[in-house]
Length: 259
Image 1 (cartoon, one colour):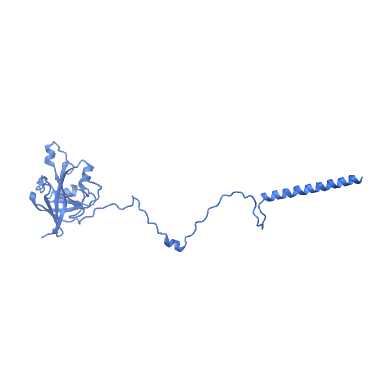
Image 2: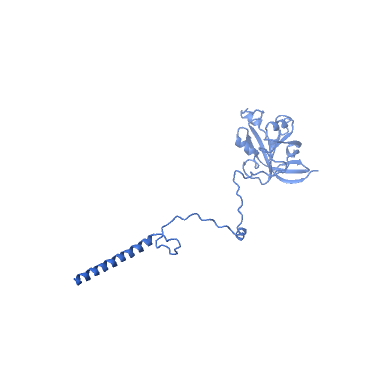
């Protein structure tokens, strides 16, 4: 009997010890998965990944701001100022071409394009016209294209001999107390029926629309009526201008005071 009681007590003791061990293991495992309680300084052994929030950009110090150069504002092509030729002042002038007998022909400036209505009206008075502004040229001595037009077969034919002007011959333009001495370098023809040809005639660099001018040039222009009629071309615009014009182009070589 005593032996049986002794065995029962031993079994009970073993059972108590087993339950205590399981409880201790469960407590340790639960603690590893739970967040730390309030006031605890021990971090859990496993931390779940979280998405970091946005971080504030550091505010530069006064020293850093002083060292960082300010960015210059960019200029888009649409707002950039377009190139304009540096021009002499458009003013009344007198042109002389000794080699073809032209002496002090009055040149009247106006805002417009070569041989437009205002220009044709000036030419109809037997004098020369010089367009300036958009679609025109520059004033005497200006960097760019000084354009002078006059009639060849009407209104006294002041430019009647212009096609006879040869390369190397001088064109003298007197204006503002100075004489601008241009020398003829080449000849081109302009068609009134071609927008490209007209753009080449009035370009700051004659014959080259869009090219930046670097020197003072001159275009003397008159009608090619006899040449057109000889070819059977009797086309005219609303102002009576024939299709073609003869343009003599020169380059400024010298400037001197007028006497």
